[in-house]
Length: 132
View 1 (spheres, rainbow, N blue to C red):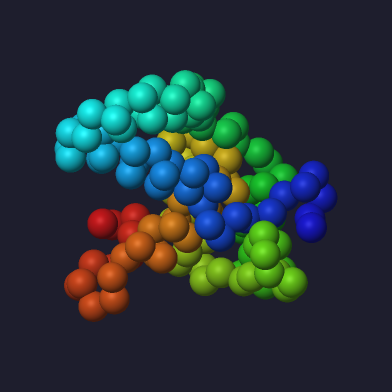
View 2: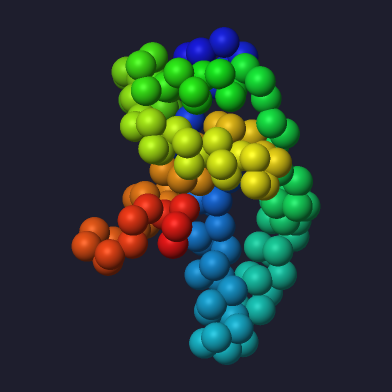
């Protein structure tokens, strides 16, 4: 792992935990199952810190910015992988644009962009997730 404990989470740790919450909300609100209201209340209380954290982007970091800039050659450690992952120059530029636009950590921008690429269907005519 790089200095400072930096590692990109390919499962988008910033957004991944909410899939179960989304199902609970869907069950309680959309499907209107009465017993699910209690589950929804519990889930909302459990995720209260997550909702508050969503309002705060991880701050930009000069060390992370340098690591992202150099990731086409040196790569970035990705959680769950034994080796570092390298990224294209276009990907790096897009991650840095996201970081600047949303005043967020460059590593968080890489994670967001990776999640976008993973969720973008092939052959949709969309150039990249940042454009989408």
